[in-house]
Length: 287
View: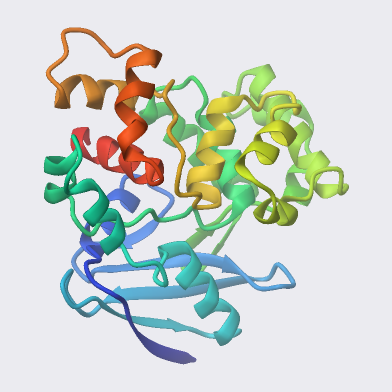
């Protein structure tokens, strides 16, 4: 058993992170203890549960991180997921003079937290496509409970090698559409047999990743943008086709109708080079 204390540059509002994580029933969040248990994997893909508990405040953020094995690798992963080595202050300074200043003031210290694994992020995005959020979570939960694994009360997404072995009907039995079952299994087969290397994506530009992934059946621009945002933490992504962002802009700017793509692109010019944070904070403003 190992335990480490980590201090982070303020502002960093972990309670807001936990609130957002708690929306997903698969996440092991304890709001009273200000703790989340992460389903991580070591370099041999073996499951490791790591507990992250807030011990400080938004103005003096500190955390107790604990686990059983692979201390250095697990600490590195936790820092990557929660973006602990990237200060939010330049982002807040940038937006303090922008048309989103009031939203950024209200939600100051909210970081762009990543999904726990890139494959997990990609599968979640494919499953969530064109579904209402409630059923999307239900379907994802069925997928993980049926084919993933549980360790110390924490659920782990299945490995691509596991899903690659399935028949489409295995997912149809969980209420997946035939098309979505094909997308999930065929993409997993590409990853399992090496035709799609998720590890190399981190080395590519946003544009190259978009070009590479949209060639895969079932992966469109919306899915790629979400993978770039929540899988890789790219700072300058703005999914203009996202209904949530459109509704948030309509509400914030008091528009009669949802903004057009052209309006959104014009508004967002002053939000560069932190469009991902504009997206996140707009989502937060209507959650």
